[in-house]
Amino acid sequence: MKFPSKRAIRLLPHLRALSYSMTPPSASTSSAAASGSPASPPSAHGDTMQPSTTSDPLSFQTPISKPAVAAVASNLAAMRIDYNEGFLLESNAAPDPFTQFASWFAHAKETFAYEANAMTLSTAGKDGQPSSRVVLLKGFDEEGFVFYTNYESRKAHDLEENPKAALSFWWGQRQVRIEGAVVRVPGTESDEYFASRPRGSRIGAWASAQSTEVSREELERKAVEYGHKFGEGEVPRPDFWGGYRVIPNRIEFWQGRPSRLHDRLVYESAQTGATGWKFKRLSP
Image 1 (tube, helix red, strand yellow):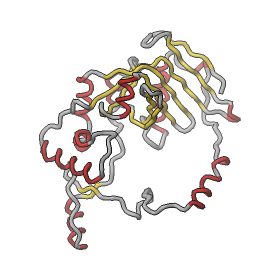
Image 2: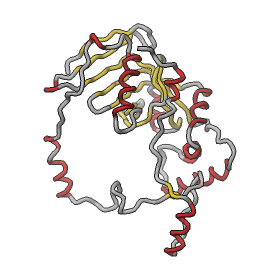
Image 3: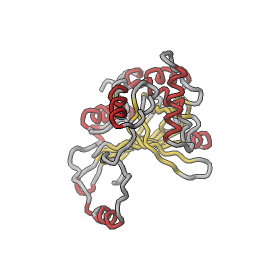
């Protein structure tokens, strides 16, 4: 397999976070005038942000009853699927984990229903308390796996105290687990990625003091303020926002198989950043 160029992999230009529903100002204003209600404030990028409603199937404004919770939980033991869509043998595994990841990632982009670049990032600070959240992979090459965040967030504080992390991708009948040391990417690399983001996302980075307590109204007010501040000009990258690179020393590929006899191949490096990789099979 020909390994994709670093630039092609790093930018992942066709992958974007799912955007929130927005209504043009004219429609919102007309609706508000007809109902006698005040119009919603404009967002940072000229649209009108719509609040949640009870008609939203994802809204939890109506509490679920305790019997209903028990009924949902009672069926968990019976939930299972058949893993019969592939296999992973030593004979068809790539010699290095980055080529293997590129192959599986390309397949996931074509077949997985959700964001294929979504990954669980796990960190722990000096107190040893683990913390996990889903972030988006925004680049990878032989040097590691890149994501972006606020440098004042909880994950960033964890990484300052303990610069190690684990990543986990789930693609239905496949998993990839990555462990390694973490470093900040160069500022120029963060600048390049930040400039490629939608304008609203760039303004949102300024408006959000990530991981601190805030009301929805305050968050939206700050977004509007920064939208007015930058106007139609450039939105620069904040100093408190940028990328991290996970430099792996262990990458495991998991392929579901029937009867729980799954395939697990783990690639390990002799030391962080080493170019030589060896893989072995683990019991499922």
